Amino acid sequence: MKPSKKIKYIFVAGGVVSGVGKGVAASSIAKILQSRGLQVTAVKIDPYVNVDAGTMNPTEHGEVFVLDDGMECDQDMGNYERFLNLNLTSANYMTTGSVYLSVISKERNLAYGGKCVEVVPQVPLEVIDNLKKAAEKTGADIIITEIGGTVGEYQNILFLEAVRMLRLEVPGDVLLVLVSYLPTLADRSEFKTKPTQYAVRTLNAAGLHPDIIIARARLPLDKKRKEKIALNCSVREDDIISAPDVENIYEVPINFEKDRISEKILTKFNLKPKKQDLKEWREFVGKIERAKTPVKIGIVGKYFSSGDFILADSYISVIEAVKCAAYNLGRKPVIEWLDAENFDPTAIKKYGGIIVPGGFGGRGVEGKIQAIKFCRERKIPFLGLCYGMQLAVVEFARSVVRMQSANSAEINRNTPYPVIDILPEQKKNLAEKNYGATMRLGAYPAKILKGTLAHLLYKKELISERHRHRYEVNPVYVEKLKEKGMIFSGFSLDGRLMEIMELPKRTHPFFIGSQFHPEFKSRPLEPHPLFLGLIKAAMR
Image 1 (tube, rainbow, N blue to C red):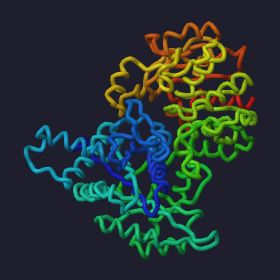
Image 2: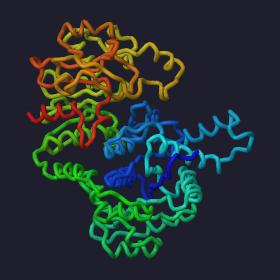
Image 3: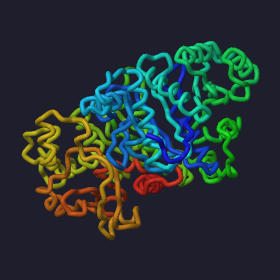
Image 4: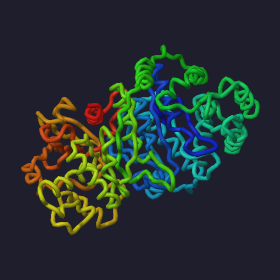
């Protein structure tokens, strides 16, 4: 496929260790180039055989992010949307599984005209074709593609092969950026460049050489280390960008520009930029730096334990939504984790607000319900997201409506009061063990009831939010719940599905839950109304 205009391609690969910050680097480069007046889009390539991220374990892979069109994808897609303030589509995400599936489907349909189909060149060509489609769909001048994994891994070699082949097809229009880590053996020892040298040589073995090296390290890189990398990696010293650790990822674009990364990229592409405009972004970073008064938020979850370590990536969009709301209100967010499986309700007392985020399954559910009950009775600001809203309905049904055995059918199929139950159209999927991409996924419209907390926060009567779930508030019990004081302030256009529940102001200062995931649409420059509401309530 040939795009209708000449596209420039930037690929971001990682060296030395995983989690080196490729996604943030790609997002930051995209933001900087966007600020120079260019139309930019970002793509993530995941080296998993999963067709999408929907069936990946969050404690291994991190959060599953959902786009407007229902695509379940890697959390880095959330970074792209937050940095660029754009809604991306399924065209911006691919996996090894999705690429192979497409190639095999084409082969079955004789799309290759009876030729022998091989891993090379057909798989890399499919990757290139997908990138061109993404550029065509978004109208981008520059498409920035993050290649998942670390160079040298078997899993991403075919994507590196796609870069090599694309360079031959459009010489001068492809740049390769290597994000590599420089470790130290002790706090005061020098940064070690040898791992980066090996990463570059591994790229060389794949027929590639980086145009720019982003050097991740604990502190800013000194001239001596830049000289050493330049000499041993055959990269100009001026093309080595220092990327020290920062307190928040939103500083990264500003740091990159200290080494004039956009000027280097545009010069290599022979592009003439407009004047740079990172004004709003710098103002937001200024708010972060000025925020000194803390606001303490507790998150009650079960997806953050990984051995003896905390894996916050499972709830990364929730964390960023809290941060963005707090910073925009002049507060410094202090986020702490409460383990739903070993829960002590009295621990909630020290928090200004509590979030119970999304999830699946019965593990840790009773701890979450205890937390919700404590928030409701002690009038602690509460925000329930997806599963968090459902469990708030379960708790209210048990404690207030006196349905003592009320539950979600997901947890107990034999409950006499299934106040949360599965959609009829989903029962077939479960019976057939069809789990991937079969939930209610993506953006759906909802009506907001006037005079409610939800209406006060959104300031409009029609909204669109992203979903990822199978179970819903059971319509059979809606009127009983309303009679006892629960308000369903948001609902589907046909009135069948409950989208937002809340308690009236006279009984609780801030108690609200959403069936959707508002965190997926929160942005640094446009924090989400529900998170702004929680932070304001916590401040009070």
